[in-house]
Length: 133
Length: 119
Image 1: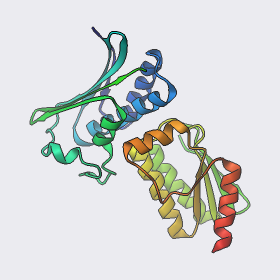
Image 2: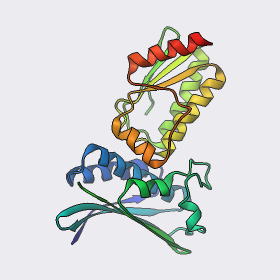
Image 3: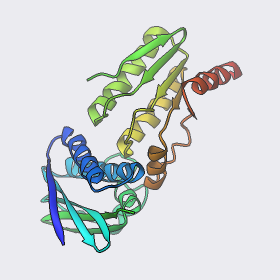
Image 4: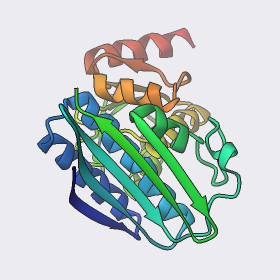
């Protein structure tokens, strides 16, 4: 069972903050504690920044997922950008093509419980789930 | 929106109470360095008690501001890092080992005083 809670378009730098605030609100409503809320907001920030830095536009969608008795928040970050050339490199800590810290995707994987990355020439899709405890 | 920077004797005090987007963070970095230059401050305390999210970009800006201020001859101490922020940063893989920190404003001032006396 799943339900889409909200969706944020990422086009401008300010949208990163917008996505993070939307994610924090959704995670609060789903009953996540303050530390998990910070993990979720940070993960969204990293995903949104990747869209902003590397593509023209993308979107982040929040879904409620249920695997009885568990409730989780599923974050889908999707863009129609050029795709990631070297998928194994971007999952290594410290790898960055933009002068950043290279903590983004491997960091998101650690902050969330489930993580999936798909990418080809017509876009990139990152799916991450955090389960409420 | 700008982050206010207050002067107290030869220290600068900053309390970040707004949600930092990338641009505000970069402006803050510039404003702080200009203020150090203007006032000749030798120490800076940046309080993060109200900051709920620090992502890799903001962490980089914070790390850079320590190195930049250091190059100018001023010490920066961060205070009030929330437990959730600390856990999230370490899980992200960001250790900020070069960044001096203290529990709260009071400890931050003590730390600055000690570091500046040692020089």
